[in-house]
Image (cartoon, rainbow, N blue to C red; front, side, top):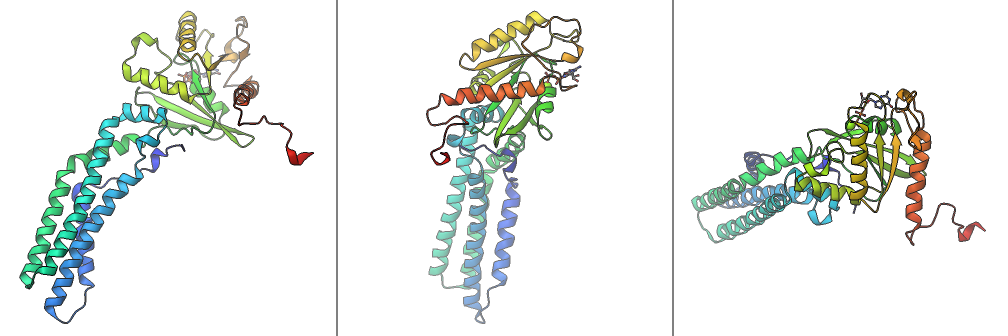
Length: 344
Ligand SMILES: Nc1nc2c(ncn2[C@@H]2O[C@H](COP(=O)(O)OP(=O)(O)O)[C@@H](O)[C@H]2O)c(=O)[nH]1
Ligand SMILES: [Mg+2]
């Protein structure tokens, strides 16, 4: 399962644009027909027009169906995102409506061509072509709501985060304003990507760094792991469950500085909730904003400052170490310095 590049989903044309494209391509095709005999010329032209208009419609619709990721091929995390953003049922239903229309369009083409073959008069050729155009238009009209839905959904899906399920992922949790986004920015090579998360109006920050050719992804959880679970609706719980399977490790930030907007005891009870939610994952607790912790007793084993860079490299190594330790338990993965047969 590769990651979904939501940003590469192509633009969806309006229904009328699809028809315009089909009919204008068809007229162009008719102009190419050369035959001195009018009867044969018109017959060929009408045939070409129907065939090419229907082909363009079919290809356009099928290209949407093919370029949209199949829900079955998605990770649980991506499916949860799609469900919350646009709804998985609608996603499936609307795409299959397009597939239906693509097939109808081919049928219309076949039937019109068979009819033109049987006809013996120029007027009949024109009529058959007009009739086929009318049928094609009404098929496209019929799926107009579905096409519009896809167009709008595409704009929503484009902004979703893309996580690669084959690379490690660090979920950065903690109360609001503890410094999650700042930490991701400080550990990232390059600018963190800002994505939207359908469960919250807040923006999600995605960053990554590379170590020994592996990409360590980091994702923060605005509005997700930062509120008591009692306040959540079902769809949010579903997202948390999905995140649980995505993250290899949770880095939980605690802001013990006087500037924290959430009282320490509330931050700590969120921490125990997070631990309870994802019992199988290691939770690394890190104190944030060490640059303004003067005089505050050292409670956490790890302290960082995203402003001064204090403690960042220690945290990075610790994350890599924890993730590697986790992977050794997988019998198919060998540890880093495992002796290779050809090295002796
Ligand atoms: N002094 C100091 N301020 C920080 C540090 N990290 C974040 N902040 C500030 O804390 C506020 C919240 O940071 P942000 O990363 O948005 O927190 P988030 O809501 O957990 O993502 C911002 O005003 C940051 O500038 C830090 O290491 N030191
Ligand atoms: Mg943030």
